[in-house]
Length: 122
Image 1 (cartoon, one colour):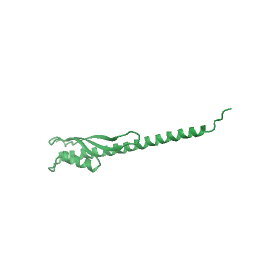
Image 2: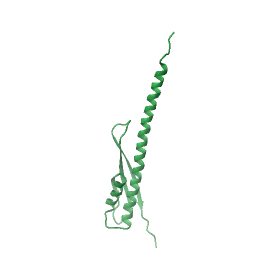
Image 3: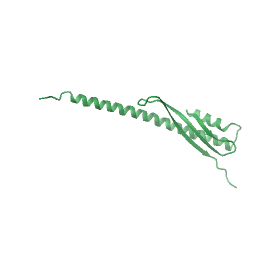
Image 4: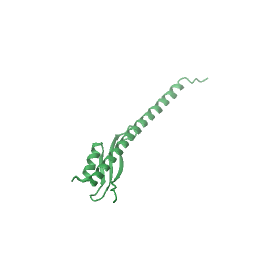
């Protein structure tokens, strides 16, 4: 008669490997979500700063103001559609996530925001 001694060890090792894999995936997901939130915050701040510069010009370039606000929030400006004479700013920023535990290579997230200045009529 065959014994099944040690079969619990195999099942325990499998469960431990699964728990480790799920932990790594959870850590990666958390890093991506934090970076995504930071990117959206930076995009919102940059769009609002550019729109304010368009509405109340101080002499600075709206794209440079937006880029400065993106950098203050840990992001890099990718694009800014904020030409003088218009009261709308659309920006795109990027935040690096870094190397993830499960997926190799550097990753980053991109966020977009738009701010419109509505002038009072009449």
